[in-house]
Image 1 (cartoon, chains in turn red, brown, green, blue):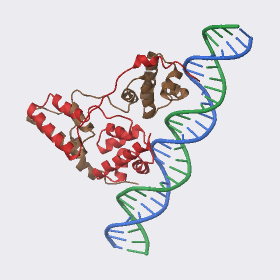
Image 2 (image 1 turned 180 degrees about the vertical axis):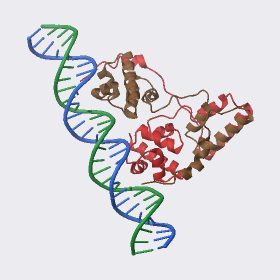
Image 3 (image 1 turned 120 degrees about the vertical axis):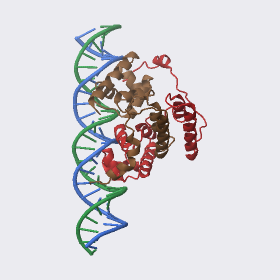
Image 4 (image 1 turned 45 degrees about the horizontal axis):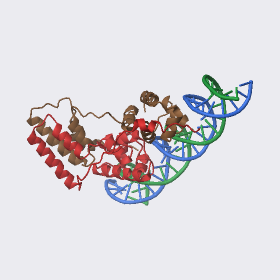
Length: 140
Length: 140
DNA sequence: GCGCCGTGCTTGCAATTGCAAGCACGGCGC
DNA sequence: GCGCCGTGCTTGCAATTGCAAGCACGGCGC
């Protein structure tokens, strides 16, 4: 993987760890990962597998997907930003007023984080039949 | 990873490949993976990284997430039921503290609405401070 | 100063991942 | 029969992943 992503992954993990006020060893133990390896991951020297990321995420009490996104092996779900907003609106267990409150809290957090809900792109489309003809030669 | 999952992953990939009417070599070439390795993956002899799965998925014109789920490194999105709770935890735009706040607000609303979240082990988010003391000894 | 502890990091190595070179086989044309 | 091609698989190996053993350092109590 691009070391750029691994670099930001490690930074992100260290940041989350510090935020949770865990030492390197505490997190490593909680995650079931060796502490030298965790150190290497944080410094961007190694690229951990998805399984390791899962373990780390679990110990940090964050979703594995968050780390996958940081590692570049998962694209941010369409649900970021608009996703949570949509989920709040769709939740059948809370009423309109409560939805408004949650949305307002969420918005204030985004502001606090300096997030602009500017644009959303979803160019993902499917051309399966068209490309099938292209794959015709195994040149071994 | 459990070879059980890897086994079903390989079967799934072979199934998709045959459905697309690609030979092993054609798919390997399209995915930028060696054909022996793809063969081993299909037979469950190797456990490919997420990057390789991405490449295979792209060549098959399916989402990488589909293969991640098959490989057991991603859970199927459960957008029903506890979708909002999950969406809060998964949102990459807000941090742990903010997630806790949103979850707490959401929970208070559910209480207000007389909704029982009994089945959900909700101490998950509140145990963090208590458990922090638990994670006190790096027994290295 | 010494010993202990907690912290993060170094280093060498075993296991795993992914690939290159090649094999075995069946189908086809000559 | 021979040669070529396409198909899937075998095998050995280089690079990578993850870990065990240990180091270096600072803080603290004696």
